[in-house]
Amino acid sequence: MRCFCRKDRNTAEGGIRGDKGTKADQERTPAEYLWRVLGLAKLEWQLLACAIGLTLVTSVAALFVPHFQGAAIDAAIASDKEKFHRRAALLLASSMGVALFSACKGACFSLVGRRLAFKVRTGLLKNILSQDIAYFDSVNTGDLLSRLSYDCTNLTSPCNTVMSLAAQNIVVITGGLTMCFYVCWRLAMVSFAVVMPITYLIKRYARWSQTLNREISAMLGLASNVANEALGNVRTVRATSSEDVEFARYEEHARAALVAGVKDAFGGAGTVALTNLLELGTSVLILWLGGGMTMERPDPRLTIGALITFQLYFNAVTSSYTALSNCVTSLVRAAGSASRVFSLQDNLPDIAPRSGATFAPSRARGPAVALENVTFWYQMRPNNIVLRGMNVVIPGGSTAALVGKSGGGKTTVVSLLLRYYDVKGGAITLDGRDIRSLNLASVHRHVGLVMQDTQMFNRTIAGNIGYGVAEEDATEEAIEAAARKANAHDFIAAMPDGYETRLGERGIRLSGGQRQRLAIARVFLRHPRLLLLDEATSALDLESEAAVQSALDRLLALGGRTAVVVAHRLSTVRHADRINVIADGEVVEGGTHEELVAREGGVYAGLLSLQERKKSEVIAE
Ligand SMILES: Nc1ncnc2c1ncn2[C@@H]1O[C@H](COP(=O)(O)OP(=O)(O)OP(=O)(O)O)[C@@H](O)[C@H]1O
Image (cartoon, rainbow, N blue to C red; front, side):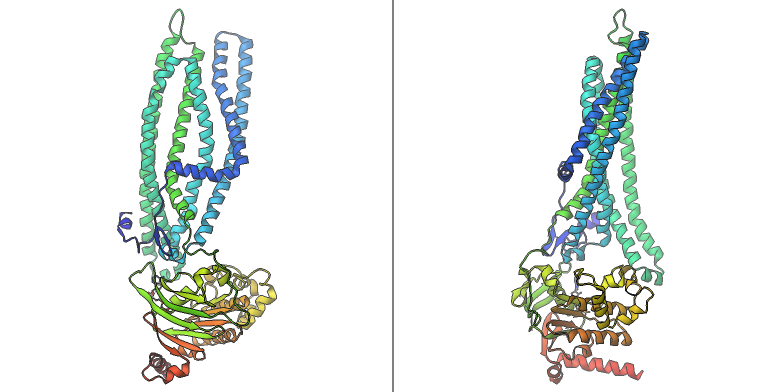
């Protein structure tokens, strides 16, 4: 934790970060947390009102139990049978009332708690998904999963116990104290002197426990990240026999969480032991003083029944007080988790996905795209200027290629066109309108994307092709037609379950070329106006490349669209209307294939001859 705090906030992992930079993580006090949870609980007001009503009834009924118990004992000592039977019947009725009402009350609070947990969890995931891509560059998935599971549980689990216990115990404490003073004020004055030291002890422990629990959350987040990474890359782990290394990394973080948990457990046990000791000591004191009062002759100040009644009320008050203090402890502890959940839930992304004007490109041709003097760097590497005043003009309906050496900034241009990030200087326009003024969802509706490493979901093939397309457009026929155009139908039809075949996590049950063809089918189904192809064939072997390339050519031949093609292999962009050669974040050359080849000593001509030489070497081999 200390190392984490020492890191440069610009590039450190974790914390809340938007597209424009880091944001302060909000610290919440237990009171603020309580207020916030009550705000959420307000939405369940009918159930909550019912639960609180039942709590009051239960607590009042519980207050009568010791009274009837003491009265019955006094009647038994006085050998008054009739009075004894009446008191015993009242005792039975009040005990049965307590049992019944407390069961109903428990069910109501439990329902409120579960509904709260559901709201917090779903709200959090919704908010995580709307965060800026810059945020995902800086966090690890394990930490997010830990916030969604561990912190959400930690945050909401005290809710139902706290709300249930707080209401009940406040009634018991108020009523119990009144009854204690009513039965014997002298004994009451002596007994309640223990309250102060107990309060102090519990307060100290709660603060310490909060720090420890924040540390546990952070460590579990790190551990979960290691597990997530190791399981996601399990093939690499196996191929390099690194199971022990990954296990050791996981164990290190899990052990740190365990050590903090053990400290918390010992601290909690110590506080409970001291509190109990104080309570037991006071009980002995009550017995000693009260017993003396019952033995006074000829007029004892206290009957034996009254002493027992007092003792029962005192026990009820102290155990309610301890329960109430535990509520405070768990609230303080939950405040640590609350800050991790609510700070993320409150964070509005810098790039608002739902605001802005609707984008509607013409159906006849795709949108005109322009990069005007664009400057850009990534938040995580502010010293590495990726684009330095880049200018690219792509007329509507044309195909523009971006080529150049690795690391030049080609994929970054695609990310900016998708508005994963906002430019730091200059502007990107679609049909002359700044992309920042447009509604992001309406832009994405018209974009078809094929990346080098296509992402698939653990759903059926049909579900993957229809991903992100409105249900009415993703009919069986439309999906099959798209798959045929993408050269994917044959291999899909050869599978026993056809279009219903499940792909496994990240589409692991398909080859790279097959995944690419599904991605192309997905694009066919979307009828995009703007096509973005980022190194779509560069990770494939020659045979897969041919199948994918012919599907891509079919895609590019569709009318009414603008295309931006990023390619390593220059043969794939030969027919582009304009080829932009990018180096060090700038366009250093531009023109058609023929124009660029004709340029003596040009970068493109150099790259092309290098690639031709390599190809002929491979063929010769
Ligand atoms: N998410 C990121 N955070 C920080 N730096 C990044 C990020 N993505 C890319 N970079 C850096 O930005 C620069 C440009 O990367 P980019 O991926 O745009 O290049 P490219 O021309 O597409 O390369 P390639 O052809 O190898 O894909 C590189 O220096 C890279 O290290």
